[in-house]
Amino acid sequence: MENSSLEQTLQDGKLRRQINSLIVAHLRDNSLTQAASAVASATMTPLNVEAPPNKLLELVAKGLAAEKDEMLRGITSTPMYDLGTLVPAAYGSIPAHRVASIDFSALQDTKGSSKNFPKHETRHLSEHKNIARCARFSPDGRFVATGSADTSIKLFEISKIKQMLLSDARDGPVRPVIRTFYDHIQPINDLDFHPQSTILISGAKDHTIKFFDFSKATAKRAFRVIQDTHNVRSVTFHPSGDFLLAGTDHQIAHLYDVNTFQCYLSSTVNAPEIGTNGAINQVRYSSTGGVYVTASKDGAVRLWDGVNANCVRSIDGAHGTAEATSASFTKDQRFVLSCGKDSTVKLWEVGSGRLVKQYLGATHTQLRCQAVFNDTEEFVLSIDEASNEIVIWDALTAERVAKWVSNHNGAPRWIEHSPTEAAFISCGTDRSVRFWKETL
Figure: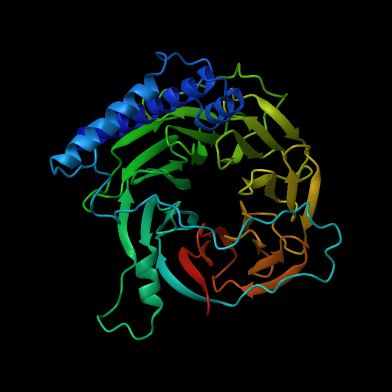
């Protein structure tokens, strides 16, 4: 079973890469150079990829003819492969965003225009046996996973969490944890979901990246493992699903091919002078995969080309001499939100490296604190360690608009917002996981 699952994953990845190559070659050969470059950058496909002339048109024509023939003969087409029947059939399809992304350059004078952050209800979901260290939502917002210092991973189904929140649940207690995975031997640092398949990856202090197929109800252990050479601090899938990046104790993120598990990066990659304290706390791709960002222990936020892995901009001292603990892109890829142990949250313009906004008023100097946007990017959320509160700012005005008691015993160490709705997860040093949802 494990070998067949791996073979299917490899087959799916190879098929996607072939399709990407044909699209890039078709656009390039038809003098649509700008479009070809954009697709090549987003899918990490070489612009000079070789393909027979008009091959894409030929395959599409054959496919349409075959489909027409099947319809005439009354044959129903079936999918080429099954992504798992134990999860919702539409897994991976992203619901439309509730509101368009904020244009941070649209308004100059924003004083007095801050919005109110809606009230939320919160509920204790579960406890790990040790510190709850990280969390990640699936791209479609239907699942959330948490990782712990106890080496376990818990997978929650959001629909079951919402059912649990209902006070009149008549069928007894609802258990939102649908999977628990045990396969690491040291604390888990980060998680990510594959953008199309029912695969969850984890990075841990045991120098491994592990792949879990959560479509299988009985699976407890990884079906494939990447053995890295360093403590894996952060992991992120390329939007195509064919590659992943690992941020480690090494100064440069390690790029892996999901199909072959080959590591493409080495110390010879063109990069700025990074000292021995350049370990990466977090790495995240942009929405198209054309660029990625790293937040490092030396306080720098660095932007890297998603195709050739060269550093295109280094914001040295982004958080002074304190660690940069998190960094992520806005949906339009024009800005990066970073957080550091200097008790600041900052918004940077990607094109110029210019500091656009500062979100002040929360103390975080000890934990690997996160700063995140809500799903509409109207608000920024982070943590105040001193007061054990969740702090919310208006993203556009940078005014602090709310401070909520976290309900954790001790400051939360991770906060993660749903990409599709007004809900987020907090993970605590008290081992607990809490769910927060806007009250209507």
